[in-house]
Figure 1 (cartoon, helix red, strand yellow):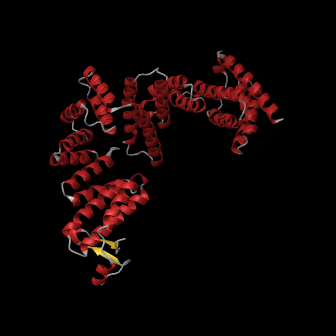
Figure 2: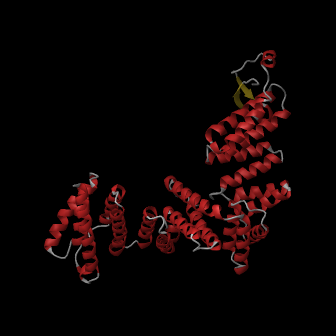
Figure 3: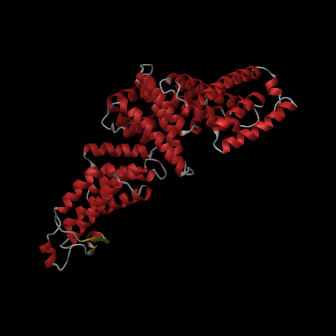
Length: 448
C-alpha cells in the first residue's frame, strides 16, 4: 500500500512539474498574482499553504507532499519557503526510497525544485551552490554536471559563496581529474583561486565561530584533495610557469607562495624568488615567514628569527597566525631563548587551547632550562615539563607519540625515592618551580 502511494505521488508530481513548466513558458505566469491567477486559485493556494506548513512543522513530510505539488501548480510564486521546505520534503523521500528508478526521479524533482526557486526568487549564485552540493551528494559519479553547476555558482558569488559550495566544487574537479578530463595544472590554478576565497572569509573579524568551523572544514577538504595529487616538483614547475606568464602579478605570487608553504615545498627553486619578490614589493606575513624558512634551511637561525618575528607581527588577524607563532617559538628555542619560546607558545594556546605542538614547545623550553638549575629545582623543571607533555598527549592525539617520547626522557631524569628521602620530600607532594624565571606548581615524582 505504501509503495502504491509513493508511485502515485511520483506520477502526479511528474505531471505537475511538466504542467508547471508549460505554464512557466507563457507570459501568464509572470502576470498572475502571488496567490494564483484567479479567485479559485487563491482559495486553493491558501488552503494548501496551511496544510503544507502544518505538515512540515510536524515533520510529516508524506502529508506535505500533496500540498507541495498543488502549490507548485497553482501559486508557485507565493513564497520562497515553498522551495526551501520542498527541498526538505523531497530529501526525506529520497533518503527513504529503496528503488533506484524511483529514487532517480525524486532526485530529478529536487533539482527542478532549485530551478523553480531561481525562476521565482532569484539568488542564482546561492541556489546553484545548494543545487550542486545536493547533486554531488546524491550522484557523486556525475561529476561533470556538478562541476558545471558549482563553477557557475562560484563565478557569480565569488567570496560570498558558501564553504560547502567551494568544497564540493573542488571535489568535483578532483573527480574530473581522476577521469583525465582535468590537468594537474588546472588543479593547481583552481586551488590557488579557491584558497584565496577561503582565506578571505577566514580573515573576516566578524565571522561567527560556527561559520569559521565550516570554512576550516572546507579548507581542509580542498587541501586534502590537492595534496593527494600534487608533489612539490609539480607545484614548483607549474608555479614557475605561471609566474613566467604573469611576472608582474603580485597577487598570484602571494597565493603561490602560500601553496608552497602549505605543502612544505620550501626547497623548490621558485620558492626563494617568490618570497623575495613578494616581500620586496609588499612585506606580508607570508613572505616574511617564507624568507624565515629559507634561512632556517640554510642554518642561519639568527636571520630566520627576525623574519619569523615579522611574520607574527604582520599577521595580526590572519588565519596562519598559529603556524607563524609556532615556528617563531621553535626558532627561539633552537637559539636558546626559552622565555621567548614559551611566550610564543602561550599565544598559540590563547587561540587554540588544545594545540599539542604549543604544549610540547613549552615543555621543551622548561626541560632545556633544567640544566641551569640546582637540585631539587632541576627535578622540578623536569616534573613541570612532564606535566606539559602529558597535557599535550591527552589533548592532541596528533602529537601523542612525540609527547610520550618526551615524557620518557623526563622520567629518566626524575630522582629515586632515596634521593627524595634525603631531601625530606615524598612522591605526590606539591612543588613550586622557581628557577630560570619559572614560577609554576607541579607534582613530585620518582623515576619509574
